[in-house]
Image (cartoon, rainbow, N blue to C red):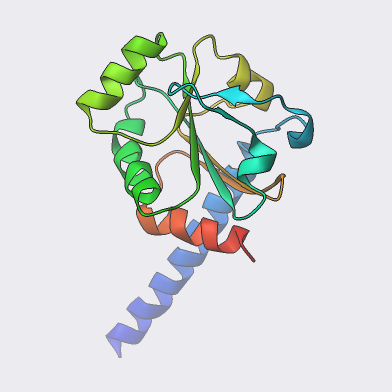
Length: 165
């Protein structure tokens, strides 16, 4: 009998937590410019990419992060794992030093996901990014989901799946 009460309390707690997370995501949601009008960007590898082209075939996870961000130290390995598994990832490092310093830092942590160096923070400001990390899912040139702060491997996978629907 007692387990029924606990199950009910747990269900209510989970619903309140989900509503709180949803509300925070709405409050901190980035306001990107029109994706189709954004110019191509250059990765630290020298390759040029665009949001529209990368999101044309399958959803794109755009990961705004920084080398100085404490939470990013927890989420970056997860994003790297997803990238290695074939998830469509583009990361944007915010105010994390010049390319050489950024590449050295990523190499030291064995991070291999593609990265655009937003050295001055202009791109993140244009998107209205106020929290690191921020995860944005773009499908066919349109933002379909976003969240900020720590999220799990399965949380990102679920958002990517949801973005593909």
